[in-house]
Image 1 (cartoon, each protein chain N blue to C red):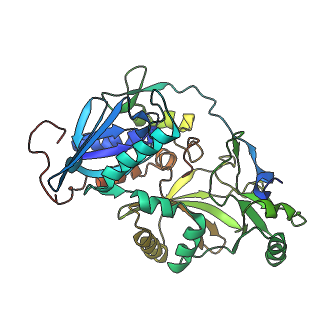
Image 2 (image 1 turned 60 degrees about the vertical axis):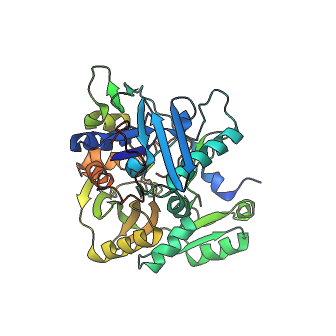
Image 3 (image 1 turned 90 degrees about the horizontal axis):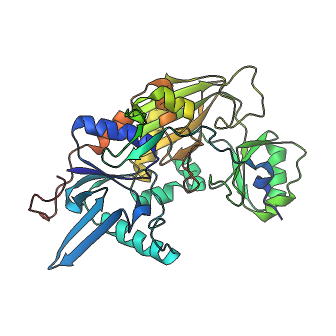
Length: 327
Length: 63
């Protein structure tokens, strides 16, 4: 049975997993929904109480009943590269592709419904609290006065986007940034603002979970680093990522988090304070992992590949009895 | 009328390096000009930064 990978061509991180799947002898079909209806195609038939569906991409044809797993990595916007793209065609293509895939029995990493919910950072914070993970004091508000009062209670604050998205018109990045004590919070009225107590961290932690496998990496905060460089993504790479152990209590909470979220994969960001406590910052349901693997040598791609390669689900019915498709 | 968080925005960094690999639909992998598989060259990936948490495209924000 085949692993379906939904991602764009330039996704070299997905390549790291494809290499392992190839080594395992597991058939792979890599499809970018943006290529509908040019380089990718689909068909599904609902007749006499049964369903037969097929996808093709790059000259490969696969039956939906022949999928053991679906990995949603970095898929393009459906039909974005069609000869005559439109919002309508994108919606039609998205409904057709993801609607049919939702009806197959394959394992998902991650299921689109779970992924959609898991992207909401306010929801993440609450789930983390429920699962026993320490969460820094956080306020999300459009009330300037609430922001001022929060800043009085927690004078050392950071601000970060609620969604994690970066504005595109023009393209800008919004790193997690320190907020000065005398800041004017009037502009909080113009958009939901996420303020969080700054964790005096001695390290950043990236904990990547693929199925049951947990792989944590630690990046020490330089003693002589700029105190305003609070976002490890944008700070100078003065110290390397190194493998580290996961405290048992954290591991238990993280498993609960993923179970509750319905996620097979998650990349957790923590800030480790001076007492060694891992403070939950966020969980990226499709977080990058290549940069950790190339620096630490941790077998993250192999772990993802092994999860995707697990035996396929029990079939509800036999759909394709002829040997005309990728097995 | 600018939202508070955008007071902290900075211009988006573009990848400076030219990507020395291209997608091979037969292999379903990106391949270097000399035929090697790009994903096997970790030193190159580290240098290019194409697997980092800020290398996501405009359409994805799962860093």
